[in-house]
Each structure stands twice: as C-alpha cells, then as structure tokens.
Length: 263
Image (cartoon, rainbow, N blue to C red; front, side):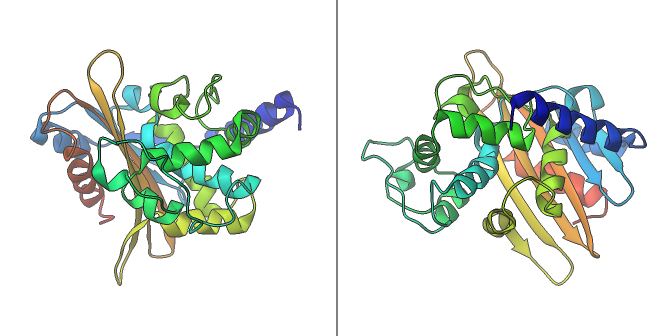
C-alpha cells in the first residue's frame, strides 16, 4: 500500500476518534510525581468513555525516543513479516560483551522482553530489514513513523519518537485487535507483555530508558490494565537526571494507577 494511503487512513481514523475525546487533568497524579521529586507525565486512556486522564498534558503530547518500549511494536512486526516463527524461536545475541550480563545468551522474544534484552531485539530488527520495518512502523501509525537508515538503532537513538498520548492510542489498538496485523501476532505480543494477573485485573507493561547525547535521560513505563471487562492503556515518562531515578518509572506509574482506582 502506498505510504500516502497508509498515512491518510491513519489520520482519518485518528481524527474521528479525537472529535469527542475528553482530556482531563488529574491533580492527584501530579502529586505522585512531586512526592518522588521528578518531572514527568502520566496518561490513562479510559477507552469505553473516550477519556484520557492526564498529569501534564503539554508533556503528554511531546514526543520522545521510545527506547525499549518499542519492543512491543518490534515483536509485532517481526511476527507479522515472518522474521521469527513465534515468540519462542531462539535468536542469537551476537557473542559480544553486553552491559547487562544476563543479555549474553541466545533466547526468544518471550524471554528477552522480560529482561529488556537489547541485542536480541536488534537481531530481530535486522532480520525484518529496513524496508519491511519502515512499512510496519507506518502501518502501526507509530509516533512520527520515522526510522532513518539504521535498522537496529532508530528506537534507541532516534529518529523515531512518540508521545505518551500516542503510546496509549497504539496500545489501545493492539489490545482491541484493530491494528492491520495478523490477529495471532497481536495475541502473542499481548501474551508476552503480561506482568501480573490477579482475580481482579491483568497488568501488561514494558519499560524504556533513553540515554541521549544531552541530559536528562528519559524513562518510560507503558502498558495497560484489564479489569471489569474494560481496558485502560497507560503511558508514563519521566526525566531521570540521577542514578536513583530509574526505579521511579514503575513506582510512580503504579501510584498513578492506584490514584485512579485501577490497581
């Protein structure tokens, strides 16, 4: 499908969904960030009511490099294109020393996403190839849809960028099964992102950590909650100027979910 048709189709769908959407600032969410002394944004998308509950809407609309949150999309594109047969097909990490020792092992996408194994998902991207990756990102309508010319670095260093609001819109389409992808691929990716399952909810999520040429580093936590037969995609990003900040991605995110009565 020509690029212009894909882009126009995505924009038309987006405009239709935006017409009645409500964006609501929630002071209690800002308190979650203030309590831990970091700047950031949180978005929870109440799909059934077409309402986004937000802390710092201006930042929620600002695009950042997705870092390892792109593993969700990368896995989808890999399965869709046949670059891997399934999420358990073992991929080589490449044999080079890694900054995290646990990454120095061949493994499948299911295991690799749990430990955010960068070299495994880089190998997946190389198997997908630049043109198929470019087409996949466009079909997903993912952020600015720009991947440049280096197939295994664009989500880590740019030019790909996405906002917190766009993250929740992408995840909503994944969970709903409305992406133009094979349903089996979407089911598999939803399965490997599951973190917690209780009698009342399921939590799916993925972290991201972008280290750019200038500070601060940016931390992500994105995913969705399923409870009461409803789906609530969410996305958080924070500035991480200090060594103590990375764990705050999840702790603040969980506090925000609790403040909204979803966790």
